[in-house]
Image (cartoon, rainbow, N blue to C red):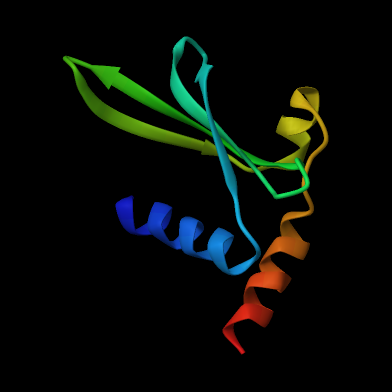
Length: 86
């Protein structure tokens, strides 16, 4: 799981940046990830038990995010990241 999160962070860096805003998600600690223009990319939530992170949940499906605000074009972000590799 840590490798997948690292890959997402690296993709965000190559695409021009991802902004993380710490927030509460379903009464658990979490973060909202937005592109530099404020479009929502995804939401992460941490499942905490016994003072340890037990799970990390990620939602990037635009249909499940639209109620939170404008959704980013994830496809465009991935394309920008690919261009950054060249």
